[in-house]
Image (cartoon, rainbow, N blue to C red; front, side, top):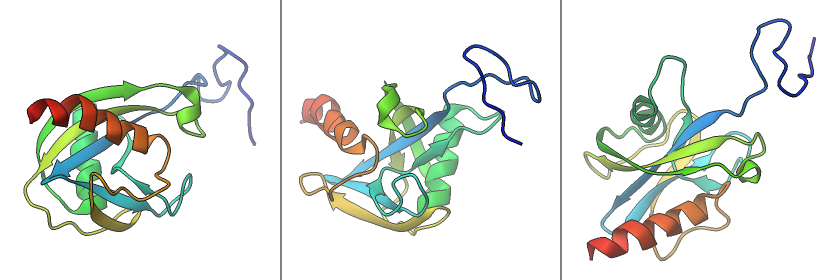
Length: 151
């Protein structure tokens, strides 16, 4: 049985409100390359994206980054740095808000797993198109605001 929630009214069954979900995205950049996954699930199945996913219950955003990177790429995270938050309702079909993190990993030998059909390193100046959601914008933003300042 499906229930349509009215604006600012709790679900009569579970008490939850119709709120927007929160996810994380991991921007893994090494040697002028970025690691992307090919999404194996909808939405945007078949498109390349930064690794990421929803924040689990009783899990911090940073813990979610570490878990999602491991699940989708097999890589072990060594450093997590908050980059930006993306909140535009049209960025995702379910209006998901995402927290983007710059992530360092132990090595560059990645393997696909979880809901990633493929995993591949791409040159920052040669990204596949189209990318899932707003990921092209997010990648370009990290290049112009963080990487260019480091050179």
